[in-house]
Length: 321
Image (cartoon, rainbow, N blue to C red; front, side, top):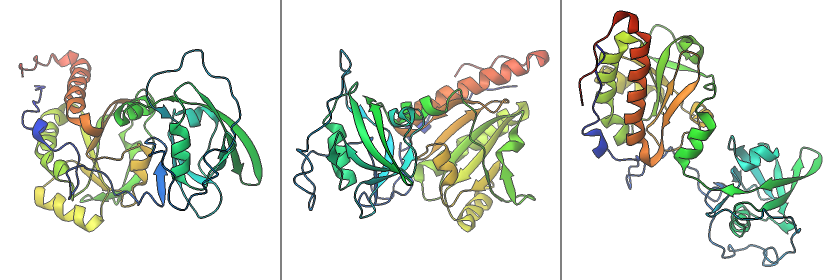
């Protein structure tokens, strides 16, 4: 019998994990070393920046007839390296930068001819435009010099960006070390032909630990009907192994100490969840501040898929929550 699970009590779970302020994030390097243009900083000139950088003349590019409301979004993660320009560490899939052809490893030297001594200056320059504006980036790629024109879009929430980038697309493949099983590794390829729930968490995350009883219940009630849970921890293997043994986790547990898989799935705050169907397509995501509501929706989606898959066995209708 497929039984709907209620998230009563889960709604009270802290939305984001952090030892200090309850805002759960996977460890973030200092903004001095890397940053994202997704959250533009103040327009004030940063200490030590070249005062002449801000008023530099800009290339006149056509605007859309009507500018969109909201903050502009470029969609890149950046870092400084002490040399002129800023380094593109990662390009968000589906972002304006990705559509324009910007790549990880590119060095952005100018934006509309305004020089960029730091990430902070690029953030400020992008913030001075509106969604719908075009900006010209002078880029150094290996030994080539390129000019890439980017059409800025309206900044949306983190959850919306992840949903747009992943849902309806093949789940990124990965292989991680496995905890507490005969096999030393787990490969996402082994889930081909299966419906599975992918979780990202860490032992130090309070919200992640408080959701474990719910995951064990999902495994117990939905497992016999074909829903598999794969839990990937961004943590040290020894810590994960101890907690998995202590709590007797019945589902697949893997470790991703350096966060490579989390990066593939664009995960920053944890916990985070992905529902992946038998064809390997991401069906739904539950991330960010609204992950509890999204997780409730995800369970309904999983229940509907399992019910459809077992029509021949005529599973009874789930009880009303």
